Length: 420
Ligand code: SF4
Ligand code: ZN
Image (cartoon, rainbow, N blue to C red; front, side, top):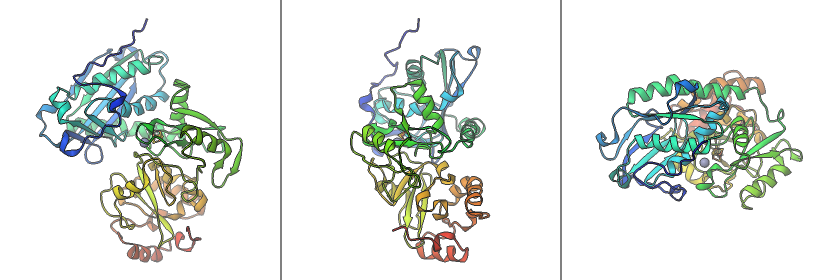
């Protein structure tokens, strides 16, 4: 018989009431910030004999030795074993970490994968909360919620920066890439159903992501396969099947089925959502988008900024300024949060002409997506090395210089129909 553990063995409270809690800079003891240093959260499936149930290990210094107010690396690897465990379930378990860690009183978590940020408050630290307690929380919650598939679970929490770098680059990123590659063979047309995701309603009560094979959740962590696995693990859970039997306009990606679903899961806040348009009834954004794209009127295109990019964009706004206009579960035509992988999708802003509209991206993001984006541009429009036509911060951070660059490179957006 499996015994359900109801109490989490940590020195602070653990309840969903703390999920929306924000820890301000002045109240924080330490911060782990994946956009600045190597951080990662990962689930790995192991054989039964490789896992010692409830073993919690901390590799590196405890939080006590960190300067108050300082930023650090953090990685936690949750190894699970079970007869019914499948690697397809790993990302689903992983995505719950956001929710588990947010339930800790005095601890705040945002983001996912290798782009999360965690703050521990002064009060939680004073009460005795330490890095090893992440292990306790993850162990207890994974065993509780995934008892159908997880028989044994052990957690290693890394605070040693070199180890965090190693885990991130040698273990986690190859795992994430492998998962993403599995999806590449699927298209929106080739599947019979899409999925809703409402995991983010704790923060954005009316937000619903519609997840399709070619459009992953805006957090970048919930693919169509993940949503499918989530639904299989928990048929009454956050991901529900959306049929696609009654199309209204396939170019916009609008369906009666999708409209009904978003209306239901947003408790009536949303009436119409399209899958492929940034202008007409675009999908809403919560707060955990990997990227935001926004209209750049002078070039007739869109600018994309990613969370890691702290500089200025040609819109005269930084990522955080764009984020303040985009989040909160409301529809904001002209601005849209999305996952990194969506950038190279054939469905990216398809209704407005697709990826040809992309005129600017931070250099690092451009390099990350170049291979896939260039492949899509070649396939859709016969353009070679499309990213060479796309501006970045080394070329321009103001619209006039950008337009001059685009003109010089004969960027296709300049001759497309106006977006507004
Ligand atoms: Fe789900 Fe969307 Fe939140 Fe990702 S951003 S967890 S897909 S609701
Ligand atoms: Zn979210």
